[in-house]
Image 1: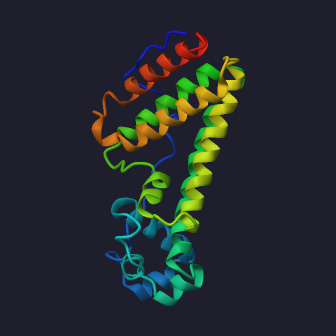
Image 2 (image 1 turned 60 degrees about the horizontal axis):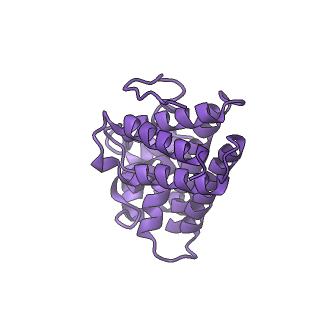
Length: 225
């Protein structure tokens, strides 16, 4: 299979869902008015925390800052999220759902074409890496910040990585290569490596680098290497 690199990709659905506007409401209205006019306080808290966690890291962001930026009372935050760890877990779980929703939408377009599905995945991942506000994979970022293996947020990250490996293994089996386990492992390293290396890639080259790497892995897998 010859993969032709491209600098352009369809904007939908490969470009992913429109980014969530998590801009704080604190600068627009007073805390009291915000609470009175916003029925879904939990969502606003989570939106605000998600933006802060992603931009600054989970250790650098405290509950007081989330409360201030979300324009809510601290009691409201603790009503929905009893601990900061619960808030971090909710952040990662929502990111996980959004990631797999996009993945599944791409997979659904290639039910009988596993090679085409991999190409499509590389393209949307490349587009994500090229975004000016991209700060890496939230799952990887949080796992790197939290050293405790039994931390609940780290467990969410671990399940995400296991799911990625499992899905890639399923694609490798559909390709009927000699060693699907090895190809799945290589693809997982490619994808996760791309997420953590986004700052080292020129935004214009991210997709082409992914496609070129995929082509090399596919050729090796089909040759039994």
